Length: 201
Image 1 (cartoon, rainbow, N blue to C red):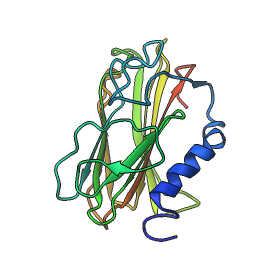
Image 2 (image 1 turned 60 degrees about the vertical axis):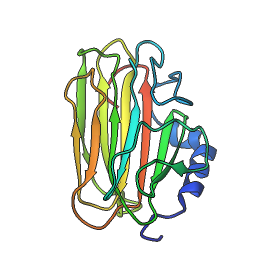
Image 3 (image 1 turned 90 degrees about the vertical axis):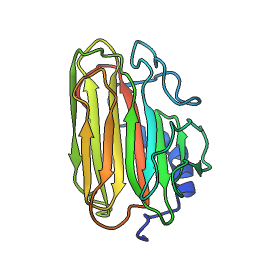
Image 4 (image 1 turned 45 degrees about the horizontal axis):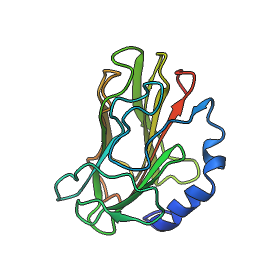
């Protein structure tokens, strides 16, 4: 594999769509939330999962942060509006792929309101390098423990030297991953899914 990952971003997006059921199938008690194929946020998602959440923004090194990114439901990439970063999203549950040929990706952030409204629990943290590809590390956030569907987010980042921060309130969808040291990162993956049982996955 090259320093940018095992395959071009467009190929990775196509592979995700093709193999989505295999990727997402092992996750327990998936909740099939609504919305997420157009617009820039999920207004509700069903059963009060969100209150206008899952807003995505990205920032390239040396450039301003993007505006809210529109959901694309496509395997073709488009400009994110920050440097040379391109991206696409595809709902199954929900996935995003972000790519930068030269500038490098500095920040990926999610914003918005969750349906938990202060109840339940928020947990987040960092994940070590993948056993199959040590060039990628991870970050996660989960909001669970109410009658609403749980919100589960996973970001897979190229290289080391990332910081992960999150809002502590279960009502706040803020999750930020920031490249602070090391070589430029040219690829990020984002996954978000709902859980029926509102328990930690």
